[in-house]
Length: 60
Image (tube, rainbow, N blue to C red; front, side, top):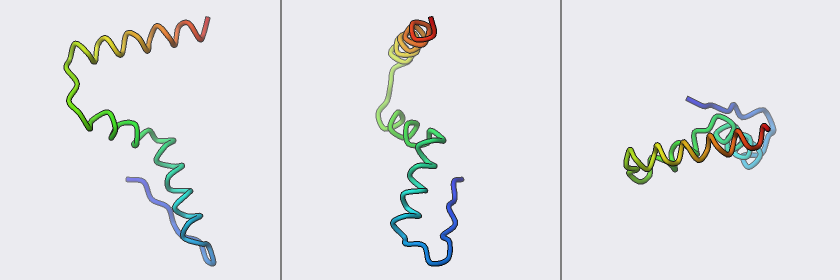
């Protein structure tokens, strides 16, 4: 569970910005968006293979 403590005399907007950044870094937002719609197992494998190929191409 992600948590952000609001500091003394800190605007709520700044704390919210820190919270959003934390959520993005932990990958929670990406996981929620991925779970929004059902993905067939064959599509998941295909997507993972494409990601692996692109990672290898970037590292080489």
